[in-house]
Image 1 (cartoon, rainbow, N blue to C red):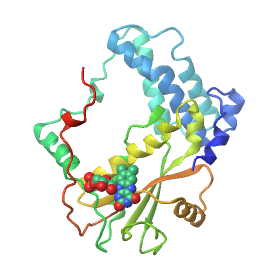
Image 2: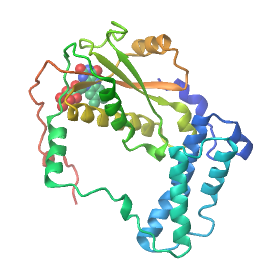
Image 3: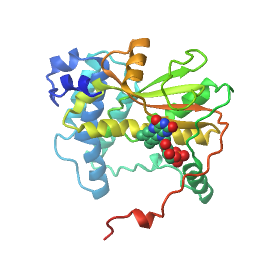
Length: 282
Ligand SMILES: Cc1cc2nc3c(=O)[nH]c(=O)nc-3n(C[C@H](O)[C@H](O)[C@H](O)COP(=O)(O)O)c2cc1C
């Protein structure tokens, strides 16, 4: 599973301008986000919280990455570019001595009712392994996949990609699972090129990125009145999918979710009391 990573292991953190201009858009955007995040965003929030000025030259890398973005002819209304511009704007205003407030970005307070719904979604989600034939609208599928994209992601590299297959269009392609095929199969995948932006980062983070997305998706499935189950498959299934959809070698399939309208009501698998699971508390 990890073989295709090997060729990426030696990628340098920093590139020359020529290299930045020669790499794929996907890799460039990942490197762009990583550089802005690690050289300015983190420092900016520390500076604002501690009322200390940013160091001289702190914006240089982000400015340079924006110049490279433009040299590549990438669209300046792209969300990655807008994110960098926003961070740069805040940093410049702070450096100019302005009291910068981020209040406009503060999420609205969570009410008691919101909190109750949140914990209902967390506690009432179940792995459901049998589904009716009722069709799941594309909009609902998009909605739950969007929840996956909002998961935390190491270095903000945004590697998550999806494969969405309706059982009726590819009958039994997903044979091999230990459950009857759901009406909608989702494979959570990653574009490995994103990880070229920071090869120092451990392999562990890569798989955690996919797990974080998968958890969000399962919760969103439940919150949208659907049911789902997290699945893993043997390599022969992964190979069959790669072949069927001609996936390039830099796309890695990590895990799967089957979703639809469930026809089972499982007994809630019980969880221990938290106090039983805290090994250390000081
Ligand atoms: C990484 C992972 C892999 C899983 N793989 C499978 C699987 O291949 N087949 C399956 O039926 N369930 C699979 N599950 C679902 C678990 O069996 C299920 O989450 C567990 O029994 C607890 O039940 P609950 O999800 O209803 O709380 C997987 C869950 C995780 C987190």
